[in-house]
Length: 637
Image (tube, rainbow, N blue to C red; front, side, top):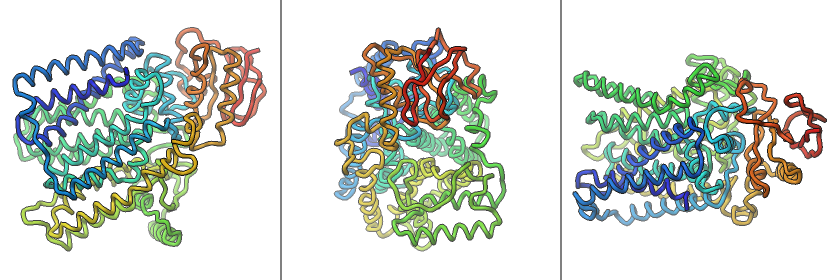
């Protein structure tokens, strides 16, 4: 199967890296090879995508050919190293205690369960339907990642690396069956990475296993691992970046600088929150370098900066051409701006309190009411409204909600409690002799959280953006608990986390393993509409009407938050061949972009717009022939 080619390439690159390490700790080398191979693989994917895009040759045969050549080249390097060093000399058994082995196996069960969901369920979350998967469909149709006219501007300016990876899997697989695996593999990579960070912070084998447990049981992480969101993806690149920052603090080398720069470049190319989360760690690294000779370190710092720019150059250029800024417009519309309009101590405390509040929900309504009351009281003391529009996403209100397994709103209350508990334990309990508290690491994470709250307006969906922070706290939590005199505490923490993770694993709101509408009892087409079943009939009926027209070109008129991707899935099943789909009558800035080739739609599909009897496009009139809210189909007269 062609879909396996990227995985085979990654594995070949990983073997080559593994055989290049000096003999020693084989478990350490395997984990290091996983991170290094992922970075190189992702860089190659970025280069391939951007190069093929310029040539308008993003097609199955070109993508497959490049990954075949990559696998061959990596295999050749690996075989050459194997002849020189010997593969078997590197392999050593990993010895774990019974409890650590139990914890490791339990995490493997969580990972396999989320992998099963990722395979069985289609992409079906709100952002996937509006822009994550829709932009992939446009790129594949256009054979390029260049911008195109669209009613949903997020399809253009949002950072694209996760969707680059999805596109390669979708092109090679011919469908979206493996689209969710980009997030899933990123979860697995992050779990590997946090164990390495824990090791560098001073955790032993048990502590490293505990770090894996903490990271793998984050509720938001579990429900996202089987989706096409991008929070696990940016988390993985940030984990890689932080790991190499820690190594750079101890010993600055060109290899570590390359790895750190590439990791951060890929994180930024995935999601702009990487700027905020990475900055404190860069400062932490810079402070550690102040006592060393600066001439060589300047070169390392310059290399990191250059790599960040080069990796993001294609996306920066596309944004600059359309929006006049490499970072895009900074807002979805005039009403919806991402960054705060007010700065100062009161807005900062307000945003910190409300972001923490997203993880305070309990099943007990009276407790939630009391917590919300305290946060409202705090705002009164600050003299700022709890839903102040200068620090709050338009049209939203702050409330503490009960726990959910929704990948947009799931909170992480137990993990938040553990972060607080670490501080308490460090104050009242003595760690094992010789253990040095990784204070700089913790301060960097706290600064990242405060920077996030300082810059971005509060949104009720911020919990998913916090995933990277919670994952990066995992090594710290594990290191602290595993170095306490009472080791039983660490075991109790691991057991509680594993038990608390079960609801998120089996009762994912959009992709449940059990219940009446589970992924095993519901058809794949129906699952696309799991988050909005009321619109399924309209989408399917509109697509069926277009099929009966034998229409080869269709226009789209959408609102900024209307679902687009289900139309691609339904329309591309046309037996007469694929239907070209383009947005028409676009009113935002992307309307200046020209359509490639001749485009004259025989029908226009309108979703969610005001009722109308006709639509005019390029001086041609289209009249309503089929309608079922919120979908209408207009046919050319």
